[in-house]
Length: 157
Image 1 (tube, rainbow, N blue to C red):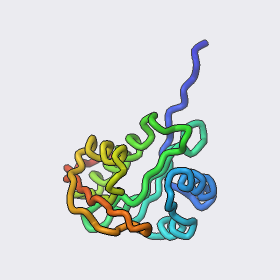
Image 2: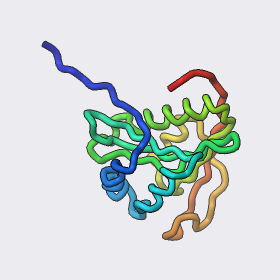
Image 3: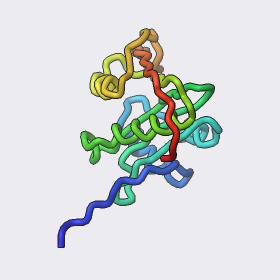
Image 4: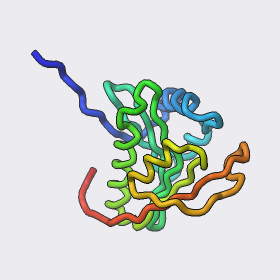
């Protein structure tokens, strides 16, 4: 009998998931979001926090807004054990499909100017470099504003 591979599942984050999500957040960023910030996003109607689960474990998450014809990607992270396995790519694909279904015309995000791995991933999705936001992050680091035009589609995720 061959090995059985469970297909990853993407679902909305619930309050019960926050402890595990915060562990990934703290392992991923030198200036991580707080539990309060994530709770605020869970309660905001235009905000989505979606998890990618592999074997019932949170492998990564994405937080984004769908608002007034735009998608704003606020936060994305992959658990250390799942890095370089396509988790972030799957999460971005999922968010793009949701945005296109909502007739969103443009996606935006800010990324640390020196986060070359993330910038390369965003370029692969069609994001275009925009302005530099000087001192954008709490530690004073600059952010690169990126945007990506989207083509609306119909269907379900």
